[in-house]
Image (tube, rainbow, N blue to C red; front, side):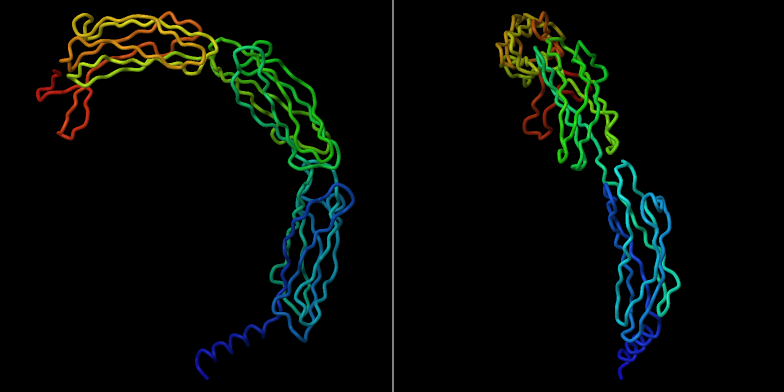
Length: 366
């Protein structure tokens, strides 16, 4: 006989010389709403003997779940016929409609005969299946006139077999009732089987330029068989009034092209928007380096960009600049009101890229 065969034979003898091992499993069960449901706790026998029976006693033990309130205390004796490897212990779970109930209890094995207890404690987890109530958030522009509806969704985690009611009421944040929105209060009811309801809050549109503002909708007093787990929803009112800004403009050093400035609206307006512009000296001088330029830009309804040009008089400028200033806007505020015009050096074939200004060996601009 080979060494390997001898080893395998000895190992089989060692395994079968010991007693069968009894294990109890954990279990998970919904408590139910009425009456009782059954938790099935499985007890297994490992290495059951083909010609030998085995038995083990069992009993329940309180954990956070309490006998008589959450489950029915029980105990008994399991007998495994020769060769049998599995038995099921049924434990009754008491249903209720109390939100947040549940917990766990234990099933313990002891006093085994013809076997040895290897894992003698199983945990039975009772999870509460009452519905949970949630409210979502809403983020949207306010609009320029009239009202914009903010529709909040109130949800149940699971359909229920009875109506579920919950109250709601709005509360000011940085947004205030009457000015930014109209307060709302009341209740929503989920019919049996429904999982979603909505609450609508009117938002007051205006043409004021404002910061983003918010208010809340708060849930309270759910019916006795439900629990609020996210009871505050936030309504974020986004100001959608257009803002005016101007870009910078740049030319290569030596380029004789005019400078082109772009003036933009952050959003299209349903009104005509105007803004004045005028050049202003920096290190470059009007009439000597560039042509003084001014005027008025008009954005038609729906238009978001306008451009204008400033003529260049002296292209041989490496470190000079001038400005364009926006002023006297109508129907929109100016948020970036100064554009810079500058020249920059094109390093060409040296592979150095572009520099805003050319800096010579001695540390000066020219």
